[in-house]
Length: 216
Image (cartoon, rainbow, N blue to C red; front, side, top):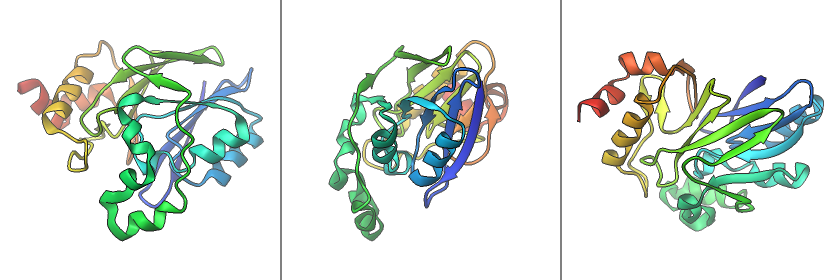
């Protein structure tokens, strides 16, 4: 398993390219922008991209999806509960003038596979499993790869969690999702949608929002 991290877009979103070095089959998680850069890496590593896996559908996680899907034919996997964000006017209305600037770049092709609790896809001998973790958006999910790595999107950050003040966010629901992650068995690498990396055990021990979640 090879995982490459890219920081993309105006709000520094973490995008991850995952592939098997022998078969060259792979997937990309949350390609939020800079499609040319990401496609150049896919071509360089000769990756047969099978899936575009989305933790949620906020603009900063999906702006490169259209170009990558067109170039590779990869299938888009996302929760149906975030379908309301597929419309540019809805997705960008909360961001004022900045949202209007982004409107001309918003080209989301829709979903090929609707992800829900327990949805699994396989590529390169690896299995990616979806866990529903709403709170940041109704369709926010965490993706567990091969019982080793958690791609936590904007649900769980290092020492923090995702914002809940945008349309569709809910603090009580976020706490339930953080508790759900706390209660997962074992330890995993935590690769979030923004900022630095962590482990689930580190977050269990010292993340104040996760601690609040288990005390509710």
